[in-house]
Length: 296
Image (cartoon, rainbow, N blue to C red):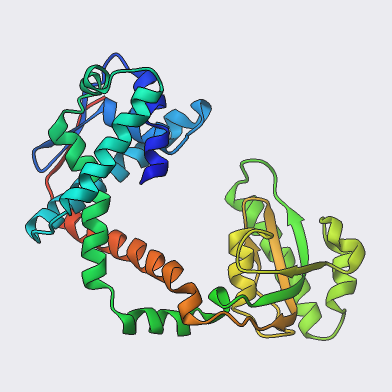
């Protein structure tokens, strides 16, 4: 939460003229244009992406309000000292910028009560998840996702076909169909994967027979490609995988098991389970919620 408040001054400087304009009502609680500006700044969204991301931001604010109401019904109590610390941290950040929080916060509709509600939400959620997520759940998740969590690394080859900017469904289908053809030829023994990569791949790795080297579950390759690769056994070949860059055919050539234990990655697992629980809770709450969006 501290990271969010480090950029609070950016929000305050925005001071949109229609901060009080209601964009949606959630069970009678108004979400305003000021709220949207606030969350846009905390997500550090670029100005040229602001308009396109607004529907997503509003949905996120709706989920936050629904989860807040859910926690209130569950009577989840936020430790007073933790909440006081977060409020003081936010006010200090504003003062360091040379502004008076008592003047600036109300301009975006952030009364003391609302500040407590906003800052108390993540604290209340953490309290709830600590009560809800169990040790057996974390163990089960670790076993189901061990290769993603224990430091396992893969070595793989790929055949990559580029897609144009803003590809159509026809563009995607053409590339994936071509990769399916190549996959059939490789699995039938008509051509080796590395030979097909040298002949047809449009990635620099083609010169190495498509070899992309060692990689872990995050960072080096597009997420859909990495996910597909970690689901393969050594020498298996994936079905075509589409990323924002193009279409990929993957063959895993080596798997190096990791040695991280459950205890090593427990915080990471807890965070993932917390995110899952949040999404499930918000989805369930939406079914009974009264959500009224303002007309353009």
